[in-house]
Image (cartoon, rainbow, N blue to C red):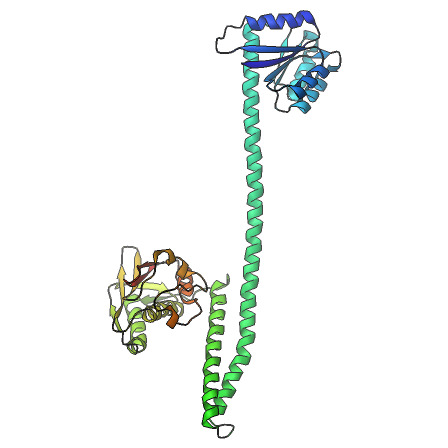
Length: 386
């Protein structure tokens, strides 16, 4: 059912339109016509009645004419399609109304059932298309504003992150200087540079010295984190034999691991050179080996191995430790993150080690993944481009 609001002050013309619509040969469409004689009557009806689909209006009415009629109807309902009927002498005005948003115009005396039905159908389709385009454009504008907002938020977050990194760096430097001086003075006292120290005082000074060293370690870790997070940080790359590199780290750390009654073995298999920052990659691999040792009970083995595929070089660190629950696999790489397990109460740390490892590997455009289950040990795999 198509509900037509007919605005026509000439009763004869109005009756002709009604009769013409009755002659429309289209069983799929029915028309219901509401007839008024003035624009003011039409506006009142639009305010009180829902369901008007289209307006069919005379161009010249007792209380309005042409574009003024269109403006008044649009203010009442901006999505309502309007077709004007005009005499031949008003055709220029009808075209002007079309330029202002009318959907079509018909010349009286030439309107038959077929012409009227087509005009109504096309006007409704055009209006529906225009409404859909308005909706799309409105959504596009919303999306554009959201993108602008997100971009602005991103810029603000980057600034805040940079300010945070600079603060950590400056604060750490300022903390490190007096802390280092404290360590030096305590060391001088314990070594007798200020005279003999009673054994009871020497024990207290030794504890202070060790606590001061732990403080310096934390400061150094914060400084390292700020360095790795800095957008200005760059790697010092060189070509390195991966097997020799990994074997060296195993050799350096083996005494520490064996002091905990654990076994550290190396299995070479890459036989390939990679482009890495040796200082940073040493830090990453050492952290993985030390972590494996921390969370592995006595008498068990830690295995470091290398391998290669057609396009990647791999470093694996496998332990027989307590393992990591699946829901914590991503969490362990977060900054300052520590997860609970059977040995976590006996292990100290800031929770930055694995964050460093991931950051260093990503700076090398590599990836790191973990395979682990509670009670079944863990395997960390660094993958680097050849």
